[in-house]
Amino acid sequence: MTGSREFDLIVYGATGFTGRLVAEYLAERYGDGSLKWAMAGRSLTRLEEVRGELGVPADVALLTADSGDPAALKAMAARTRAVLTTVGPYQLYGSNLVAACAATGTHYVDLCGEPAWMRHMIDAHEEEAKASGACIVFSCGFDSIPFDLGVWIAEQAAIERFGKPAPRVKGRIKSMKGTFSGGTAASAKATMVAAAKDPSIGRLMLDPFALTPGFQGAAQPNGMLPHHDAALNAWVAPFVMAVINTKNVHRTNLLAGHPYGTDFRYDEMMIAPGLGEIGKAAAEAMAKMNPIGGDGGPKPGEGPSREERENGYYELLFIAEMEDGRSLTATVKGDRDPGYGSTSKMISESALCLIRDGAAQGGIWTAGALMPEKLKTRLEANAGLSFSVSD
Image (tube, rainbow, N blue to C red; front, side, top):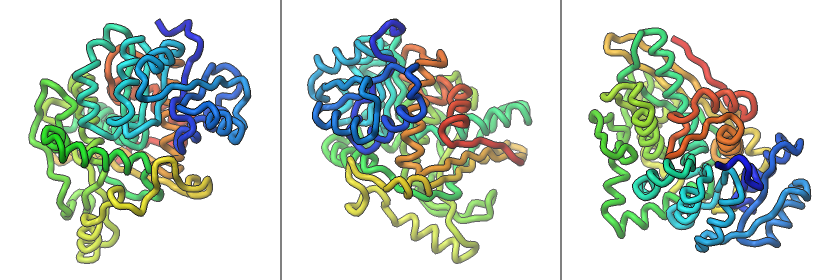
């Protein structure tokens, strides 16, 4: 349905910090003219300024649409095969665009880390998206692609090596340099405000199966308390993004037909530096930190310098544990800071996977259920990610 449209891709929010990085990436890597794309936002003047500042070719069209104008968003969506949006918090500014894409059969990717809003969108638009052919994929940045694909890699290896999936996978952040985005912080704050007004949002945030309507799996590990992880011989502490990543991993398992099993258990924690009492003290200190809830981080539209983005990195471990004690570890590495440099590439390649690799299917998906192998190939080739498996 979307093959004959005016544009292949529209970047909505192109004047924001992450949106600019996406536009810059597309211009640099896909500037051969084969990709018909446009930049969109609220202000034509700002779009013109950003296009000039980034050196984006003048033939890249500029479109205006306000997030509060459903008619304008629907008209915009109807012109393109896919929309990539960085305009958050999505619970404040994203609902009309999801509705527009579901109605027009337009594919959609975002950076959402707001599970309560995602559940509301699933309930409201999944059937319509299936009917129209719109392929809607949330959480196409650091939350949750490296985690979603990391679990998938670990489970694929377990099936190949042990003959069946691992009933337990531990996601562990081994190292990370970089900041969460200002948009992530704003989304967290918006969620806290919304939960204070509506208790049902708080219940969804606490439910590991909030994104698996109709399915409730096994009791999940408690990732909220620091403890000693015998598998690593290290102390671990809560990871702030686990609240969204774990839900997306369980949704992947559901949508893919439970390849990890219906009793699959998964959690995410950060490995604390140091051994023994030093590691314990570090884990307890990390547990008290709130890296995205304070006022000292970047604001929406702000972010680190190019040097800071390029010097950032992350390394994630996914330990697949079998009932008989056997195990293996999948490792995911990224060569840029997670919240900006790596995220802007991941969401771009996710969109291109939909429109160039034939991955799109109508409905509301996760990357891990829809296109794990195709997206992995793209991320390794273009986005600085690597995936490996070891004993």
